[in-house]
Amino acid sequence: MTDKRITLAITGASGAPYALRLLECLVNADYEVFVLISSAAKVVFATEEDIKIPSRPDAAADFFTQRFNARSGQITVCGKEEWFSPVASGSAAPRQMIICPCSTGTLSAIACGASD
Image (cartoon, rainbow, N blue to C red):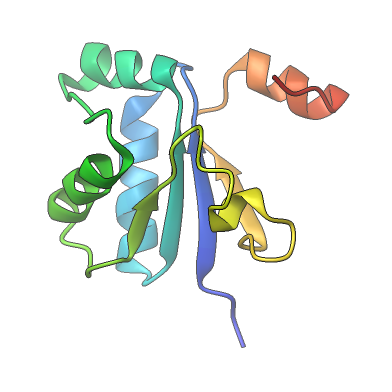
């Protein structure tokens, strides 16, 4: 049985088109996607794609759901302060995660085990 839940983290690195295409592919493959999007990534989306990602997580989820014609609840955007979201729990988090695009700051933090 395949686990069809995945976390997609979108950082402030250049590459917004890659994140959009990846999210579209995950939706089309019928994954339940938990999206984490940094403030810097929202600036990159505005710059590279002329897209304004809503600041409220539920509004951002609605935005992506409509854009990719996802089923209701298929895309969940988790806010920075949502400590009880599935992705914040080691026992409830999806087993898979992609960071796309991944900034070098994020890559360094992962490699060193650092957090903020």
